[in-house]
Length: 338
Image (cartoon, rainbow, N blue to C red; front, side):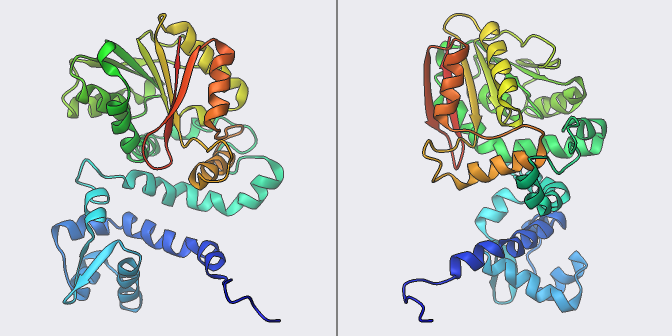
């Protein structure tokens, strides 16, 4: 067989073995390597000693991180790349490693069952068999704190973009539904001092939210409301936000949440939904499509969706003016006006 000169298996092999690089990065985050190197760049021996690495794997591990673009090595000294220093140093507010920590502790193992998931349609985590996917997380304070921090890390770029791109000047109040640690409402109110905000989530989230909001100096303008969006009315505000929430649920629940948002908003009020919105042709946003597979792994009925899908649901429940606007990376927001 003669192989065509313009075809190679490179992309196939790189994708099929991508878990090698993924686990190398996740292990480095787990060991807080980037946080350590932000303070103390060092040679092989010093880093190996501080991290407790075995001599057999230490050099390959660090040099693999160099080749992957997360570390630099000059004159034998290892240090973070600028990107790693900004986003993977745990002491910086820009840290996004919380999501990677959760991926390492939970998602990495569950994704090993993707074949079973796509064949059975069943989730593969604690929710397997139809159980509440969040019950185990919310029952364990350590897991809950890790999860809430992860949500802040993965969402911060989009949160900051919403703070800048949505027309907040005509609004007085906003409420974040399923607020987690509270980063979305924090970024919005930090950028717009005239706004007052509400974080709405299960009562167990309250202490973590209030600690985060106080740490950002917002306790006088941002408050927490404990509740369950399945059984309770949503708080009333000029704008209701669902950040990385709608994709957790099946279509019936998505529509229920949008109906509740419509009921809680005043005339002219807005609902803002953001997720890794899939492009309408379902060909380009690979992250959004993979996120939808992650919802298959993680939830009994959740899935990601296109902008056209979401605008259709919004119009179905009564919203009149709808549009889609890109935020950052794979994330976009869908806006509906009552």
